[in-house]
Image 1 (cartoon, rainbow, N blue to C red):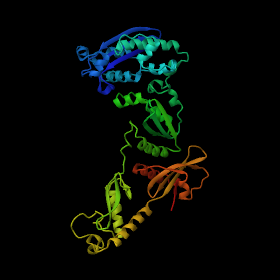
Image 2: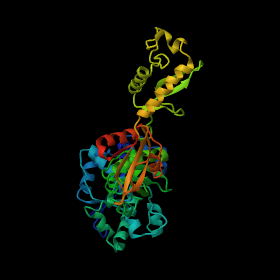
Image 3: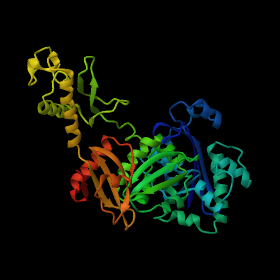
Image 4: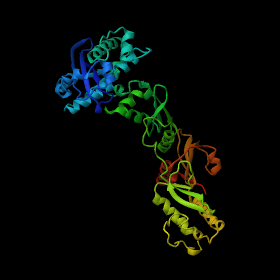
Length: 454
C-alpha cells in the first residue's frame, strides 16, 4: 500500500516552519482507496508570498487544528505504507519532524515521483509537478493546494506504475537501493560510477558550478553518506535540491585527498563548504626596516598582503622562535619588540646595543641576516613518497624550507635524489599552516615514507 502525500508549509525547512495543509491519498497500486485532507494551524504567520502562491491565509488556518491534534490520524494512515511524494525528501522531512515533535516516530520506505518520472518517462522538458501534469494531460484544478497536488501526484503515480516496464519502482524499493534517499535531481548512475578509492569529489548545481568539495578515503562510500538521514534543516534541504552532478579526482592516498580538498576549497570557494574557507595563518614572523635603517623582527597577526618569514599557529610559538634567534645571534630584544618597557635593554650588548644607537645599522643588520639565514636553513626540506593511483606510480608531496610546495605523481622506478629534478614532476600549489601541519604530522607518523634533502 502506498501513501501519496502533499503538504503546504510556511517555509522551506521543517525545523523552523510549520505545515499549513496536508493531504494523503492511500493507493493500492491500481487506484486511490482513501483520501484525507486538513488545514493545519502552524501557530506562526504565513509569509505573504506563500499566501499568494497557495491561497491559504492566516484567517483560514486560525480555526484549523494544530498539527499535534491530527498527528495520531496522520501517523496511523502513514505507518506501514510506502511514502510517495513529488520531491519526497521535502515532504517526508516535514511530516517526520512534526510527527516526532508530537511523539510519533515515522520510519517509511520512500518513493520520489520526480526521480521515477526521469527514469520511466525520460526526455521530457521538465519534471516539476505542474509542467509534468500539463505534458501528460493530468488535470489539477487546485495547484499548490495539498489535495489538488496529492490527487495529481496519485494520477501521475498510477501512470508511472503502468509504464514501469523495467521495474524501476521495484528496484527503488529494494533495501540496498538507496534510490529514495538520493537528491531529486541527481541520477543514480552518478553515484554508481564513483570509484571506491581515495580522492576529492565535487557537487555541481544545475549550471555546473561547484557548490561543495569533499575528500574521502572511499569516494563512493563518502558521497553516499551525504544522502542518508532526514535532517530537516534549511541548509541540508537546499543543499540536496541543488545537487545535479558529481565529478571527482582520484588521489593516491587519503593525505593527498586532504591536501587537495583544502586547495580546491580556497580556489573554488564553494557555497556549502564552511570549515576550511576561513583558515589562514594565525601569526607570522615579519621583517621591516625602520626609519634609522635598522632591520626589525616582529611576531604579528597574519597580514594578508605581506609575506612572512615564518608562519605559526600562536603568538607563543612565534615568540619562542624569536627569543631563540635573539639569544643565538645577540639581537636586540627591544628592536624585536620582545622588550617593550623603557628600562635599559636586557640584551647581551646592553648599553652598547643597537637600540642605543651605539651599534651601527650595518653591523646589526648583518646579524639579522645571519639569523634569518639560519632559520631558513633549519626549516626542513623533504618529500613524502607514498602509494599512487596505479601500481606503477607513487604519489609525492614536497615541503621546501618548512613550507608546502606542491604534489604530484612519479614513476614507481624514479629515484628521488635531486630536489630540482623532483620539482619537474611536482605541481606547485598554494599552501597554509593547515596543509603544512597535515604533512608534518603524517611525516612524523610514517618516517619510512619521508625522503629528506640537505
